[in-house]
Image 1 (cartoon, rainbow, N blue to C red):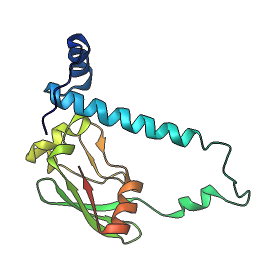
Image 2 (image 1 turned 45 degrees about the vertical axis):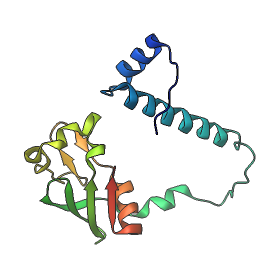
Image 3 (image 1 turned 120 degrees about the vertical axis):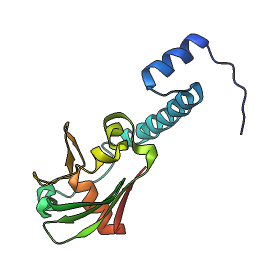
Image 4 (image 1 turned 90 degrees about the vertical axis):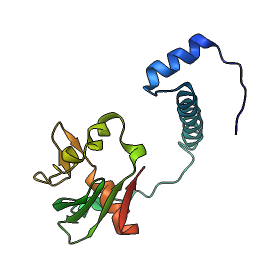
Length: 148
């Protein structure tokens, strides 16, 4: 849906520059998404001090899951098959929209094919890696982790 909005040109050019986006439309969209997310996070801050906590809760006990990845296969570009130490297996699917910033090199199929798991997590050359705990939780819940 097209919408006409008068925006200060200097402000818009600065937004495009700092966002890394290629177009003004993409920069404005990203700015709005970040603005909304930040405002929603502010609502959480208001909850501080209002919730009751269980003094018996041991947050370290929740860390007993072994999130280490023991194998990774690349069946095709932008798709991985992973197996965790606890036996859980699943797929990781990259959407092209996720291939920006630190993940931009993964757009190259030859580079993507270099995925490994020597240190217990999926990694590529240049210190690119995936959070094994988030991957494990999503695969446990859905059988796959779609990054978009």
